[in-house]
Image (cartoon, rainbow, N blue to C red; front, top):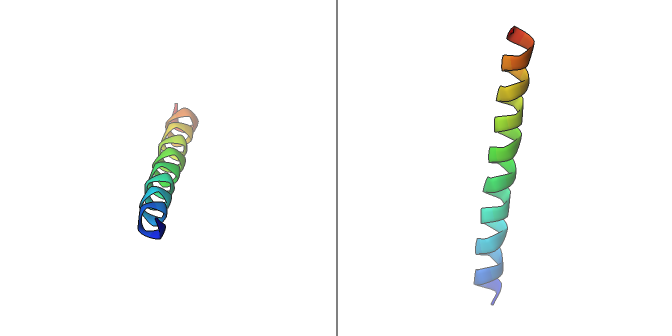
Length: 33
């Protein structure tokens, strides 16, 4: 149970980081235009 919980937590963390990175890239492109 604990193992599965940590796995899903890692997935959420990765998705969170991915979203932030994507948003930052979009903002950078918007500022450059």
